[in-house]
Length: 404
Image (cartoon, rainbow, N blue to C red; front, side, top):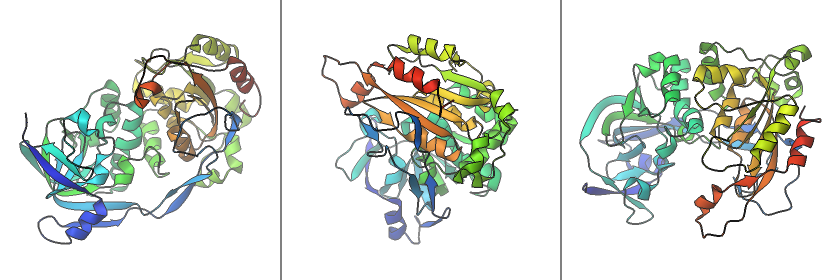
C-alpha cells in the first residue's frame, strides 16, 4: 500500500492569506465581473410543481428566475502539487478545498482522518514550470457532459482570449473517442497539453486555477459560448437563432435570428437513452413511437462521430430527451430553440436547464415516476432505478403550443 500523507483542507482564499509570499506564495485576482444570468422559465410541459414528492438539485429551484456569478477568482499558487487526473491540488501542507469537486476519497483510496483533513498517497513527482488547471475529479474524462461543461471552459478562454498566458493546460488522460475527436478540432491545445495520468503527481512552479470553471455544471458562464461557437465553426456546423430570441433579454448576446421558413426546415430530435444501462425509462418504446408520429427523429448518439453530433444539434429547432449527458449537445443548438427534458421524481437535476440559459434555449420538462423497489438501497443506487413517463401528458405537450 502507498504511504499516505495527510493534508489540512482549506479554501483557496485561506491559503492565499496564509502564504502572501515565500516558497508557497499564493495570490488571487478577479476573473470576471459579477453578473446575474437569467434562467428560462418552464414554459411548457410540467409548468407547475408536481403534487407528488420529488427530489431536485439545486433545492427549491423549480421557479428560480436566475443564478448569480459572483466573486469569481483566478488563483495563482507557487510550488503547488497536482495529484493525478482527479486534479487535487496541495500547497505545502494544505489541500485546496475547491479542487476536491467530484472527488470521492473512499473510491480513490484516499483517507479522511477528519472532515478537515485528507490523506493522499505519496508518489514520484514530475515537474512543470507553468500550467493551468482543467481537471474535474472523477467525472472529468468519464462523462460527456462534464467534459464539455467543466474540463474544456478553461481551455477555451486560453485559446480565444489568451487567458492564462503561455501556461500549458493540464487535462485528464484520454478515456473515450469523443475526447480524442474533440481535441482533433483544437489540435493547438492538444499538442501543448499535459495529460495527467491517474497515478501521476505534478509539481507546478506556478499553477493557475479558476474553481468556478472546473466546477461549472450548475454555474455555467455565458462567456463559455464563445468557445462552443468556435468548436461549431471548426466542425463545419452552421446553426442559426430562432426568431423568438428577438424578444428575449438574452437577445442582448447579439445572436442572429432566422426567418420562420428557416425554422420549419430545421430538425426535430428525440434523443433516446434506450442503450443506457442506468435510469431506464420502462415505456420509452411507446414514448419514441409518439415522438416519431409527431415528426421527431428518434436516435441515439452512441457511436456517432463527434463532428456529426455537433452538426446534428446545430440543425435542431426542437430537442427532447430524458435527462442525461447527451443533452449537453444542446449547447450546439441554434439560440432560441426548444428543449424538453424528461425527468423522474427521484432526480430532477437542473444542470441542463442552466446550460439552456447561456445558449439560450426555451425550456420545459415532464416529471415521471420511478418504479417501487423492494430491496434496501442507498440514495445513489435508488436514483439509477427504472421509471415511467406519462404517455398522455407527453403527447399533449409535444403536439401543441407553446412547445411546437
